Amino acid sequence: MTFSVTILGSSSALPTSQRFPAAHALNVHERLFLVDCGEGTQIQLRKYKQKFSRLEQIFISHLHGDHVLGLFGLISTLNLLGRTAPLTIYAHAPLQTILNQNLQFFIGDLHFQLEFVPLDNKEKKIIFEDKSLIVESIPLKHRIPSTGFIFREKPKQPNIRKEMIEKYTIPLADIVKIKEGADFISADGQHIPNSDLTFISSPPRSYAYCSDTKYFEKLADMVKDVDLLYHEATFGNDLSQMARDTGHSTATQAAQTAQQANARKLVIGHFSSRYKDTDVLVNEARQIFSETYAAQEGYEFKIESQRMDL
Amino acid sequence: MTFSVTILGSSSALPTSQRFPAAHALNVHERLFLVDCGEGTQIQLRKYKQKFSRLEQIFISHLHGDHVLGLFGLISTLNLLGRTAPLTIYAHAPLQTILNQNLQFFIGDLHFQLEFVPLDNKEKKIIFEDKSLIVESIPLKHRIPSTGFIFREKPKQPNIRKEMIEKYTIPLADIVKIKEGADFISADGQHIPNSDLTFISSPPRSYAYCSDTKYFEKLADMVKDVDLLYHEATFGNDLSQMARDTGHSTATQAAQTAQQANARKLVIGHFSSRYKDTDVLVNEARQIFSETYAAQEGYEFKIESQRMDL
Image 1 (tube, one colour):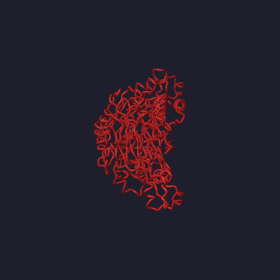
Image 2 (tube, rainbow over the protein chains, first blue to last red):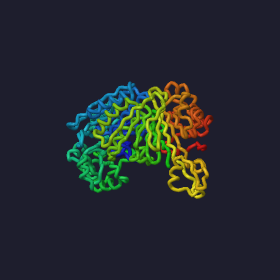
Image 3 (cartoon, each protein chain N blue to C red):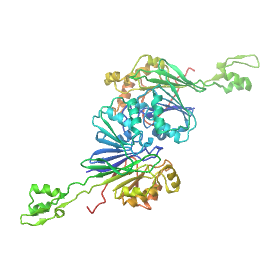
């Protein structure tokens, strides 16, 4: 089952000829979730073959233009494409007024329901949950209220070991119970614990999006043990003062958070336009956290679990 | 002296993976004028190496999102880049309110002056003029008020034929007068008419932008003798009813206007996303007007004069 994130935009406020403003397309079991929606997101979605019809929810981290300005055009396009399925937008409350003003001016009547969910940035909390996915919000620290997100697969039912079914001739009715966690009593009265009968084929995976934010220690706790951590790295360590002043992070700080969080993999992005080549930032981060990769338009990161103990 | 247009966007309302929404970058003697500003225009400007610092004026044809939605991000970027030179926007009046709402929300304080000039769509008229350029507005016919633009170089002073200067030993003071149109009386009392003394090295050139519009006969009169006519061709002739219903033109109609206008060259664009390959539209137009070319992102059309009689 697919669980991957495709980078649509890796630039910070000033896009370049190669880098679009912030947007990530998250594929969870062929359902599409968009995190941030900078200018040109709809074009990047098309370019990288993300299906508009699968888009269910949009999460906006904060209300700077480079994370928002693709929203009006994307919604207009969904409307022109004849969408009827509802669309949910999670964002800080002030977006709602300017969003409505733009939709009213540029679109008029929407043919689908747009649900707006204001983000509460006080503490880490669950903002969405269904049978396969949990989404949590994380308060970040930026010049304006900014929120990160963690997307977690829900644990799947365990698989039953085939050799056990044969060995103990387990009836179908019991197989259902065992999948739900029951032990099994065999025909000769032997007690077989559930853990001997089952295995987890694919442990639940998780992806965290942390942008924009300056470095702060508590963030690592909030994204503890995440499989793929996306963390902004607007600057290199030589510009740490500028990072502090502007509420951003350095590549070193992104790596520190990944290390402290025991993340499996780190993807850095939101690069300042001064970095023509991002190797300098990746190399800087790898000195602390070797599994660091640069966000790049069109690159799909498959999210893999590190929880081998499950 | 450069006079050329670079296509930044050739799509209609639905951009594709290859085609951005409407925007043309017009280079007039290294001064930059933008016509329409669809989503992603700032990225296209960078990609095709158009210098932001040279941008003087923006002309918005009409207030559909695919011609406007790049404006907020572009202005934000100009502000971040430290622009101080004023910027003029010509557009239909209702844009001003939503533009200000967005600038207020996403930018706050602008470091440069933004002048807004509302378009009057009643008749063809001059909306800008300086020593080298005249811009005229043309009322088009679309579902909402829509305006085309003609950019005309001003006639340059003629050059003096060097052999005449030598032949008649023309003094410097007279050369200035001859350039302004005077005849010359030689030392031996001979009257030399101005036309024998001078030649026009580069006749003034012109470019017209007509999008969005349905076909109407009077348009050809309004763009009479233009050197490069850009005319929308959203559909092929088989969809002429759809073109009529939506206030757009077919490739055939664009070619008819070019022919009736005695244009030198026709560029068609604003293609419906149904045309993966625009050859079908170009071929259709060429049956009527052979000098037809397809707009394509990044392509620079050099505008050349057809007025050889000057």
